[in-house]
Length: 68
Image: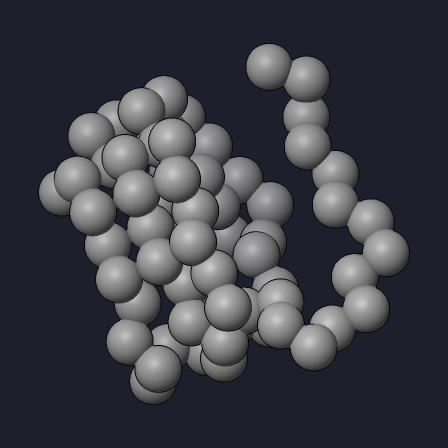
């Protein structure tokens, strides 16, 4: 699986849901996703693009990226 587009019906991602999907390079999240849990993309070493409308109209104050 290289690219994923989540349908509007998906509202929640599970902790570690895409972890170790080493071939995943691109994911499109929808605006119904309210939280990206920890380790959601852990080990996705080829993930280069995350497209999202999940954060439109929000006042996100902090995004924490681990050192890589």
